[in-house]
Length: 315
Image (tube, rainbow, N blue to C red; front, side):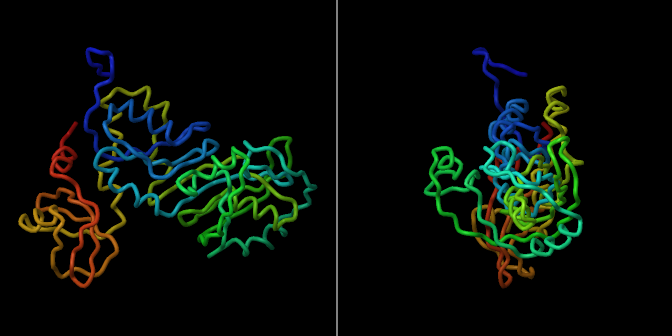
């Protein structure tokens, strides 16, 4: 770790995406700050929070990549979870206070019966213990203060849901779940609602995000592995900035159009309509994102000339 005369770590421009397998018990922000320190990065951000109880895929964005982190916030997600039947808690997970305990008499046939209720477009009421904000303050802050805030139910989509009966040690009967869902889905709420449909209640005891926006847990590096690496090895774990844009169509501009595009000017061309495209210059440098409407390329998120230069360097 490089330090200045004052003993403080010397930060530097770092650009790219690191896929972290977030460890159990860490908040997303704590994990981000640790990796930022390990990379000596000047600017960093994550792509949506994972609860401390949860592990799994957490894309961390550095430098120029932070401009496109919203695309991961909006991405579909995949999870594996286990929910203990018969017990409900204040947080819908194992960290909350027990609210009620009910007997469990659930069969595979019961699970098959309720499953269709939770496939496709469903409505969820966000939990009080969540990062969703009300008047600029996260709901979990209200919950910790004992204040209940009215929340409107929201529509989310469950693309795939596999459930089977499992066990949580000596604690009792559980449901093992594999979920593929849209952004904004709360797995704790899903498990809680399934428990109610089964007539016994439930809360999540284990949660792992296995995929988000095309990234899988198999691509991730653990925090322990990062700590054991040399600085050069850590930097080698970074994916390029445009890894976040892989699902989107590509538009390439000539030099003159590239300069005008980077100045925020729209361009005309024979491009099909698209809500988001990745825009590149003649030398293959990522310039930013845009929307295409009626043949007009409308700038959205643009990189600065310095970011384009720095992100193209081998650090």
